[in-house]
Image 1 (cartoon, rainbow, N blue to C red):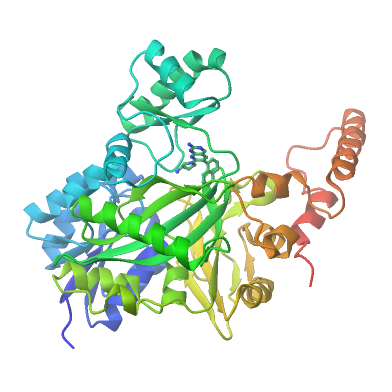
Image 2 (cartoon, protein in one colour; image 1 turned 90 degrees about the vertical axis):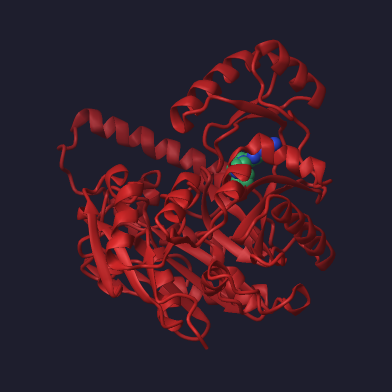
Length: 500
Ligand code: MV4
């Protein structure tokens, strides 16, 4: 078998850079990574064949600096660049800069990135193709009167979203006409600040939606196919915590319909490489196109485990101009996979980042357990980047087996030195609604609202209120010193590792 490339530069860091290095190595491709001063001893640097220092810790001067990344690829003789996710992965200017420097961008054409980057244009494309979209505007809304007309016609509540946004940033829920003008102003200024474009659009609000996305693969020879769905409804503030494949809600018939819609959309914008089409699914089970992510996603491993296809290898082969070696009828789904995101965050302190040195680390293993990690014992989690340290992925013959295996694996996980999301992941896996597959986007609010212990929610809230009142009274009598050790309450919470 011939390698798609001889040498690839990975323009990323952390677990995804490691994931791409692994695929390259199995294909006989030499790897180069870039790194910032904060990542001198990070795992992707230790694992790559070569690593190039590109600047200070701030992403704007390193991982987002197009000229520095391109220069590193040229200097090391790389033929192609894999952007991972985040950073420059959905930057059309970067894709063009790679091409101008004679480098293959391992991702879609710049034109497809742009076509999907503008969410209003993407909605229009979907509608033109007969792909269901949430009722709303076909062009960005400019003045208050027009917004009021649109909102009244689609019906309240509505959502205001940034045209160049995505992933939930800059969204505003508007319940009544009276709130509209203020929300519009706030959304515009937020969008302008975050995306450099203050255009916004309006959609009818879908109550308690589920977030289900379709993985697509397209080659440069006109084949577009899908690898089914991922269920991503377990999120907190638009950060996914748990993903699974398949979704407990999706029948073979619905998978076929969503998959066909996703492929049609990808084909219409000339998509090539791996991409993901996001849908909102309402309580009646109807799906609506939301947006397309023109990159490899964090949660891609669950699709790999169930379809048996290596998405990063497919990306490399597609970028090298190879034809997809299988057809839609050869894509099959076997068993169930679940992914948990192990973030350096403190779930007992509102999920604040918990960067620092990992003192101790013991990762789970055993049958059908996959550890996609960017860290090691002794490594430092820098404070400059996102908090994802590792992903824990398990496979089982059915959903119950996968949940049991994930609970077993989380129970084996030990990380010291930094706080992690493991305790909250254990709670999700132990939850009755989760076990029953009753998932929706309000799941985490309900779970976190329920507090640390078990029992009826209202009683626990009363209990916490009483404890707080007693604490405040004690505090007034004897204020705690500023650097006091964590209270017994917090310590017991942190020590809690879930039902065994
Ligand atoms: C919505 C919605 C309800 N109605 N759009 C959040 C992420 C971004 N990609 C879109 N999001 C939503 N869009 C309409 N018209 C509710 C959400 C939403 C959500 C979606 C998926 C998963 C979790 C969520 C949490 C809050 C809001």
